[in-house]
Image (cartoon, rainbow, N blue to C red; front, side):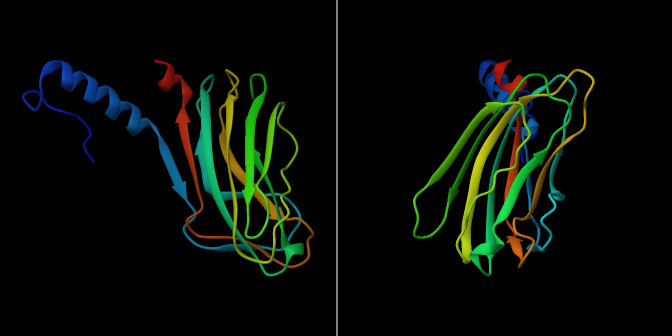
Length: 175
């Protein structure tokens, strides 16, 4: 990956703009689920593979794409996020897509609390995508971490390898 454009590589104005773009791209981050994981408990638990460190007082946009597999539809997962102290509300959009059914979309602009509990069908390819937008309190710090569980506590919900989260500092977008 190109980290910086040196003198003589492009005209001064072009070099300046390219360096601004590279600074922005390098401040974004993505994490991927390295291997499939199954859960049987109905207790929401952190997924340490899908987590980002946050800075005090910054605003963030977190996008995610999660693919679940269940052996039977009762194995559907609950999904939430562990967040540090938040200044104001969290804007959230969750959408779920699975074979043979209509798109389900949930939007919220409230203090963050409840888990999203999609209902899936047995099999693979159950997709949950969405985003969160929030501002961390000036002294809160911490991480944003996906939390998930099996909704019923019976059977097993599997989060597939390759599921991902991406974070962007909104402060960088606004500057």
